[in-house]
Amino acid sequence: MKAIIPVAGAGTKLRPITYTQPKPLIPVAGKPIIAFIIDELIQAGIEDFVFVIGYLGEKIKSYLDENYSHIRKQYVLQGEREGLGHAIYSCREFIDDGDQVIIQLGDSLIDIDFNVFINSKYSTLGVSKVSDPRRFGVVELNEKNFVKKLVEKPQIPVTNLAIVGLYFIKEFRLLFNALQSNIQNGFKTRGEYHLTDGLMKMVEDGCRIEVMEVKNWFDCGGKESLLETNAIMLERSYHDSNQLEWEGSIIIPPVNIGKNCTINHSIIGPNVTIGEDTKVDNAILKDAIIGNFTVIEDVVLQHSIIGNDALIRGRYQSFNIGDNTEIDMV
Image (cartoon, rainbow, N blue to C red; front, top):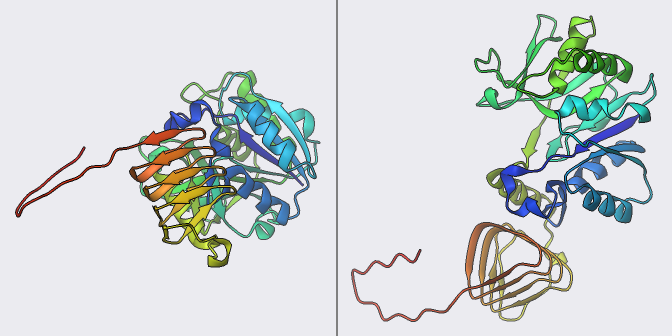
């Protein structure tokens, strides 16, 4: 069993932080998104990994080489980002004909029993019911609950069953042949070679594909969903015993504070992740992700994402306010 993890995207919805930091390395609950994915797959028995890198790929490679030196891994550079189908096709030299493959996108955290998922009788897609299927690849099932049709971002969806970025491919050769056919014939959707179209070609060629509904699905592609994921993962992993006492400060769990931080006269939490070697002084932080080596002084921050090596300073205010007064400081 091999795993393919595509991490070549530019993360445009999270700019400006992704101008200098690849999205899979953004921390939630104290560790990068990609670390959650790899740890889950290792626990399920996966030993061989292929990472499709592109934008800021050297930073991802450096992190993986330093922190996951014990796993077998290969890197594929996707120079031209021509879609997820093209990314998976680019891995062909590292996957043997009879290999079973699990594919998971590098910006989504998924609650599912991976041991059950990778032991499915047929190729299987992780799915979830969504309120707006037009944003996703969607699946239509036949009367026997096998995949009948797959459509990427349909304008008029006939189903609300969305693919969550998790795929188990029983025989990679079948997917490879389908993707190769689409690429050789220039078959694109909205200018890209989509994995959804490759899977649809497999179905048309007679391959049986089933679905498995996931328990939870955390898409970390935008600010709102990233902060929500941070809050949920903090709640799951928080332990009071892991947190130190900070001088003159109040810690409202759940929070995760990295190594070598300095926190003075501040209120931290709830739902705050702070990276390593960061200084917080006279500040209030709530619902936030703060990077490494950052300095935050004299400010109130909430619902915020702050990158590494940032400096944020506010200013003190002094008031003597009478009755029936409203002040809005923007």
